[in-house]
Length: 198
Image (cartoon, rainbow, N blue to C red; front, top):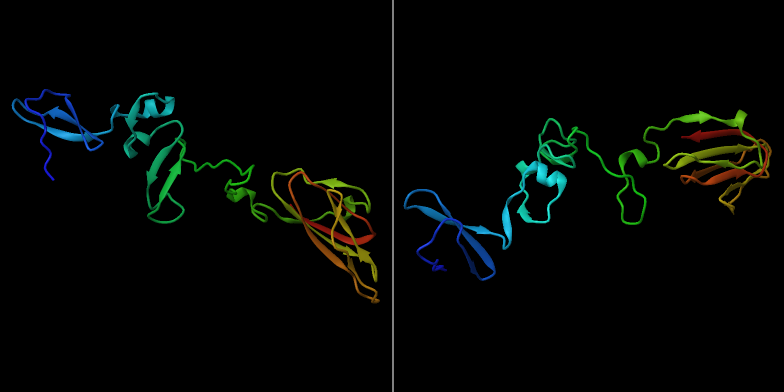
């Protein structure tokens, strides 16, 4: 398909054809070229313009993202989690993602159960029937071992979890329950051990 550009032209002339805008750029005394531009475009955004934001329509290029306050574009096999992949990072060089707080959000690594958490024996600081709260922004796991031949009943936010019970002598029922962030939890019956992954 041939496009019949207008002539004569001067530097900066535009020509719209089939929904595409072309802009003429003079590159010599009698030379120049037409390039594709977005209608209303006013050039390539600089790093400062990307950081500050602009109402004008401008191109954003990978080079323009380098050094911006919000995002820095990095393609570096040695610096990314997976070799030869594209990673977005802040200008400080750290990959930052907002923690998930609503439906549709992706969970960040530090919000995963078990990441940065360790098991602790908290039995000495727990009393049957008293409520406790998960104060962290990630779930915790509680593991409670009941007394010989008894039951273990865990209540989370007022909801009783299925009971672990045994009528056998020398058998100790055990319950494992995941506690969401901010939730309250308690054990209704006597226990012999209480561990938490937190």
